[in-house]
Amino acid sequence: MEILKKLEQIHKDFEGEIEKLSKQADVLNLKANVLGKKGSLSEILKSLKDATPEERKEIGPASNSIKQKIEQAVLAKLQSIELEEINQQLAKNRIDISLRDSLMMDGLKAAGVHPVSAIQREIEDIFISMGFDVLDGPHIEDDFHNFGALNIPETHPARDMQDTFWFKDMKHLLRTHTSTIQVRGMESRKPPFKFVGPGKVFRCERTDATHEMCFHQLEGMMVGENITVGNLIYFMKTLLKEIFKKDMEVRLRPGYFPFVEPGFELDIRWKKPGKGESKHSGWLELLPCGMVHPNVLRAGGIDPEKYNGFAFGLGLDRLVMVKYMIEDIRHLHSGDLRFNSQFSMI
Image (cartoon, rainbow, N blue to C red):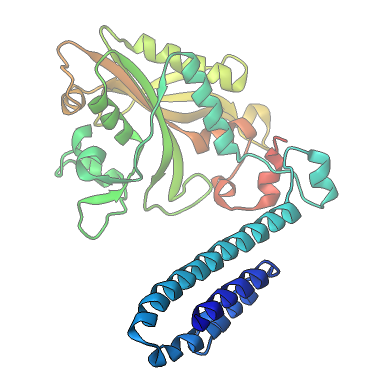
């Protein structure tokens, strides 16, 4: 049948043409020339009106089969061209970041790890070596995990101590401390346990040399039987010795925090950067800590008659400032590569 022969020839010619093409636009043009309203296949099918019913029964399925084969071939060709273009682009832009000399030859500066990230990793490794787990928690919290479960009910004056970023529903907020990880840790574990939880926290504060709206903390908690303040001091001194590579002189001062009783401020002796050693050496408030309040244990599903423990909240930004003698916390969040490049670890 003449029409069937023409359809087969169109398909054969199409297969020969598409193999030669290497651009997506050319493939789409070929498809239009064959399957478009004025395409060669469409023009032949218009002549079906003159065919007999028997011829139409034979030509119809044949034309649909050829059309499907052409569409599948077009799709496969387009995908093949796209993959080839991606591979060419990757090969062209390939940089082996493990090769320092390669980076320098291309005029790129060596990358570095931000000092806060570096000290966070270091502290995590120290606590892991002492048997602690490392936990995480969400930045957006609810009232219960941020306040209620930490012995800070709605009418508690301690809420006034934290300038909070609330969402419109007044039920959710940007967490004001990593103590929320304590609550989630207690909910998911049974004593005895010990863990740390690092992360960003947010408070609506006026920025200055020692305060930021967004900063980093690391929360720690140990719960078991017969835990004492002596355990707390041991782990804190071990941590500081590992960080500063020497024994650090510390002191505990009474401090009020709703989630611990008794509560303390832990200070370390340090030397302020750029100042005279004797005149400007002194005590630096480093972290709040204490024995976990029984109400907090109850909120976490733990029996305070059987278990007790300690908790602490370490300010990572402040620790970085002490370790690297940085005078202004705003450097840590400036995004200034001149500052960050000083801590290159490549």
